Each structure stands twice: as structure tokens, then as C-alpha cells.
Length: 415
Ligand code: SAM
Image (cartoon, rainbow, N blue to C red; front, side, top):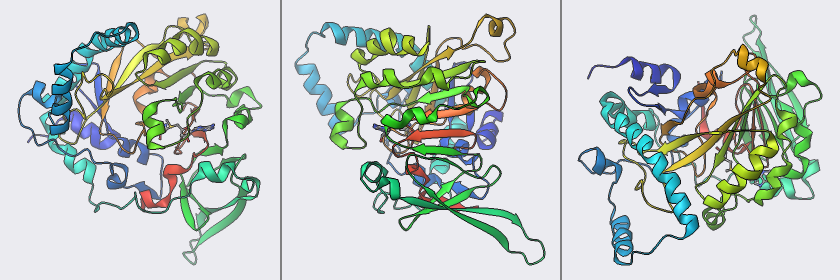
């Protein structure tokens, strides 16, 4: 099959722009790997959650609503007892109906991109065999950070300095740094490695993190306005039955988010704020009526993250009420004033878009900086921060109570 320019672009940049739709397909592994010099994230470790092919042939519509025995059973059950939606459910359904045409058009474009569909299984597998990431004993940073010992835990960070040409040895500098409640900067130009409790963590070049609980979040506020941020990504631990059930991570009462120092983190010359939000209608009301206005964000734009399997079919029925195969992101500007509107050095957000990818671990979101780069105000490269992060990136400050989670060396190989 002929390789299109878009597929070449996916291989080079991690982004495949789909023709005739406001949609793009991302390879998070390629995007994340741009942060590293000596290491690379292993595709089979990122894609360790099984989203293999659905083994269903057929047209675009049947590929979208891939039947599985359980889902079919649930569907029949639902069909037997049709019930009226209550007022809140009707609002949620109206929101879904508004998004539906855009999501269907994006998915149809993906199904037409035959070269991409053919490439997907290879992209997910990489050349490595599947890593057993789930059974390895990882450090539980949430627990460790909340113990009385937290102030005494130290990470030994190894920085490799320039190669000594005469004897071929690298000059390695080791520094012990308190792991919790302290901002830790990686090396500006090279990946560093941290050792903690017999495990190794990869710190990408130019990364920075603060691993603390919400109570210490104000430690992130920079002393000087040049260090404030142009891109702020927030993926809160929203209260939600599914997260509690799986005990994936602790959740936070939604109203606590009103105390995030978002305005203090936003660059005075303008910042793009991105907030991941679940499909619960009550949450939307709180976010639109209270949270975004309190952060100074007006008229947000909605983007959608549509989750697909390695054969391009959706991970679930598009219309399944409580388990939509997509998540939403609200995007809006802070401190973007009239002056910026007159001489913008960036493109203003205009209308909704769809991002598609094969999901990784539970609740792990695709990296957004590159796909949003043209919409970020301020100087380039932008200063970026992620709140409630579970990994690090070059040019990013990552904050959360388990910011190092996906930096465990078991997810990486050496280049
Ligand atoms: N964006 C992340 C990703 O792509 O992997 C997922 C973030 S997850 C939705 C929310 C994160 O917030 C979890 O790592 C959770 O442990 C963390 N969190 C929960 N309560 C917190 C608290 N009180 N302070 C700091 N972080 C917290």
C-alpha cells in the first residue's frame, strides 16, 4: 500500500491529520519519546492494557458499534425496560447528541485512512515483546508521600556529564535530594536517572517536578513572572464511582479545585488552560458555572478524545449512556487581553476538534503540547505545567502526589 504524507508525518511527529474532518490521530509513545535523549518509552509497555482488534468485519457503522456478547446482553436488557431519562440525563444526552456528528465524522475519516489502519497494530506492538508491567512491584508514591517518613525520603539523582574523550568514561554526578515536597529539576540537556527504594526512575531532559499533596500546591507558584506558564493542563482526580471502585488513585472533592492557584500560575502574557472533564452532567454545571469563571476562563471550547482499538474500531458503543468511548477537554484562555487579540502570535481556538488514539493505562491521557502548539500564547517554546500529573516531560513542570508514577524504568529501554 502506498504510504501517504500523513502516515509519514505520524512516523516523524506522532500526529496523523485526517482529511476532511476536524480530527487527528495521535501516537502518544512517539510524542512522549520526543522528551528523551538516551531512553525511549517502550510501546508495548504504554499500550499494555488490552485494546486489541475487535475481530468484527463490516462497514463503518458496525465497526463503530462493535458488538461483544456482554454488551449485546446489556443492550437487550436495556431494550426490554425502556425508561424515561430524568432531567439531568436529558441534559447529558443533549450534550452527547451535539457532539455525535463530529465524533462520527472523525471516526469515519479514521476508518477511511487505510494506510493508518494497517500501521496501527505494528505501532502498538513495537519491536519488543510484551512487558509484564502490571505484576512488577512499583513504589506507591501516594502512600509513601502521606507517611510520617515522607520528609526523610531521598532520591539519588545521577546526572551524566559530558563524555570524557580521552578515556571514554562518562562523568557521573550523584546528588541526594528530598523526594517529597521539594521541586526537583532534571538536567537541562540530558536525561537523568533517579534511584529510590531499589527502583530506577527516568527524568527526561529539561523536566521538573514537585511531588506533594494538594495542601502544598501553592509551592508551585513561581517567584518571578518570567517563570509563569503558557500552557496549563489539569486532569483532576474527579470524584466518580468508577475510580473509587478500581481504587486507581485517591479522588478529591470537586470544590477543592476552586483553591488551585491557576491564576497565579498563568503567564501575564497569556496562557491556554486545558481541563480534562468526565461526562457527568453535574460536574459540567460546576465547572462551567463556578470553576472556570473562578480561574478567569471565559467561553471554553470543547475538544473530544475518542478512544479506539488497534483495528480502528471504538473501544465501546458510542451511545452507551454511562460508558462513552470518549472524554472531553475544555480549553480556554487566561490573561489574553485586547493587545494579544490585535497582534496575536498564536491562532485562537476556533470550534471543537477530535483527537483519537489507542488508550494506555487507566486514565492516562494523550500528550497535548504538540497538537495544541499553534493555540498557545506567549514566547516559544512555551512554559508548560501539568497539575495532577503522573509523568514528566521535557519543558514541563509536573505536579501531583504520584508525579513519578510512569517514570519507572520498567517502561523504558535505552536507545
Ligand atoms: N493526567 C494523568 C495521566 O495522564 O496519567 C492522570 C491523572 S489522574 C486523573 C489524577 C491524579 O491526581 C492521580 O495521580 C492522583 O493520585 C492524583 N491526586 C489525587 N488526590 C490528590 C491530592 N490530594 N494531591 C495531589 N494529587 C492528587
